[in-house]
Length: 145
Length: 178
Image (tube, rainbow over all chains, first blue to last red):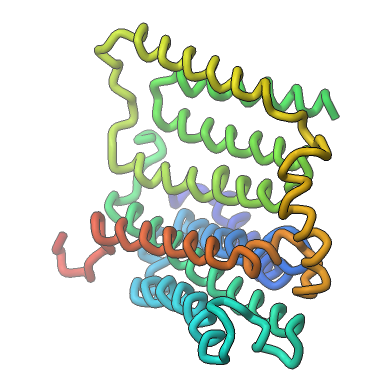
């Protein structure tokens, strides 16, 4: 992989824009196409691209395994916890109407938090699955494919 | 528009046939990614941008990478099947014919009298803006009206990742273990 100079340079140039696009899709899901699921996948793809050009070990130095496991649990907990919080506020499970000053505002908040949970969970889960598969085999030569 | 649909469908069928004929798993994986990309294009022509986005990101993007990761652990060539193809072929033809026969009763695409247009879908379109303040109705439906379903989907992904980690596991620290 070390001789793919153009690939490595272009991929490194693209990385910040991929992550920025992931954030855009995450926070702009209310207004345009996208949302937590797509944003999480795009974010994970950014990390996976980094692993493809720099190796899985470099990725696990940036994002340790404990962070991935904690992240996907945290994302799911954020979603499920939003439901529990709404129950504590006296409305039904995943009813966001009490989160803001009025029900519409509460819905906006609830959707934002829930989508954030989805994004974190998906990004960490996808990256974790990739790391689990990719670390098993040492670097493959191009001819081995 | 019909020309775009036709081109996409022809390429979709050609890709599927190529996947059936090929034995090299690397080529099959890349063609499966291409298949997803073509499907995403079809969803675009149906104005389903959110679905197209997901199909392009997940189907063409990440599942291809994950398949390649799995492929690196196994053989590169599919073993030729020792069984005769006659019975599976008849099964596929009968099932396909039954499915096509089933679609004959269905209303045409975009027909205003279908349950999709008259039942709950129209109510979402009318109410979502005022009730949630979110302009993208798809997001409002996924995260609010159908919040339980989305919670289930996230749980599925979480369980999938946990299962992969349990089965394959993360790399150990540098102790020569494994």
